[in-house]
Image: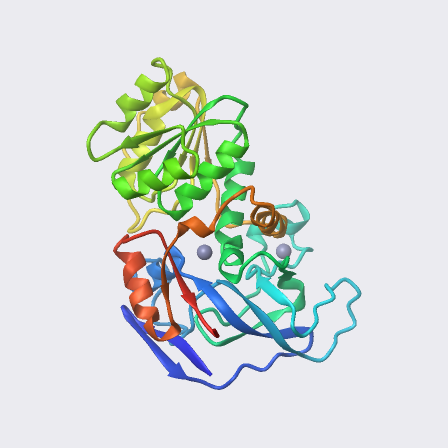
Length: 345
Ligand SMILES: [Zn+2]
Ligand SMILES: [Zn+2]
């Protein structure tokens, strides 16, 4: 089969490799869509910690969906979902053990025995353990299903961030991630304000339900948020951009009793000068969130299935597998929104 293989910084090639073979309890899946994630691009650009030459070449891509074409030998586990050849499925790459210290306290996203059983991604075929598959409802497309992973990360952040009906919520950054946060915050009953310096992204935010948008290239977003909230600031701020200036702004926007979620990693690593009194005297609650749990993944598929969150409008570019490098470059340059690699018809 053909697969993309990362050899080093900006060195991503499409090559012929051996077809993967499903082991016991696994499925072979013809991949139909794989989304380009900012974390894939960090590996490609060499900006992610631990993205050194070890483990190269490798096939990136963890946001994928496709059709089951073969099953490995059955394993004696009553709990596995009844996956059949021909099923349309999406794969949850985070294969957690369920029994370690973190899993037993419900913090599945920090499973100490996390396994990488889900393979494939930017390739014609992938292999995944049956436990990691969810069957797609008929009307959910492969492309839409590929958003389950990023949307699951967003739901994890919202579990950590209280939002009340009618509260003022600011989303800093209107990339694909910010636009998913916007929709989840709207569904939680918030008045949503989106800030970004790119006008086409703000237009998309309005299309997807933002009550207000702020052009961060033209005005001071902190001052504008204060204006829009009678001087109080935002009850919740979700910082969907990994940049010190965005985090500084997000903290400065918080109202008394505000909740601030730092959603994105910052690369390269940086330090943030911070007045601790800002947090103390305004009684801010600052949270982080990272990855997701199996339940968030299941919930993400339900939100897509029932149209509660619209993901198709976030796809700005589609590429065949042969042009995967262009897909990565497009995401790296922040042109458009989500780049999707589409395969197999
Ligand atoms: Zn991702
Ligand atoms: Zn575990």
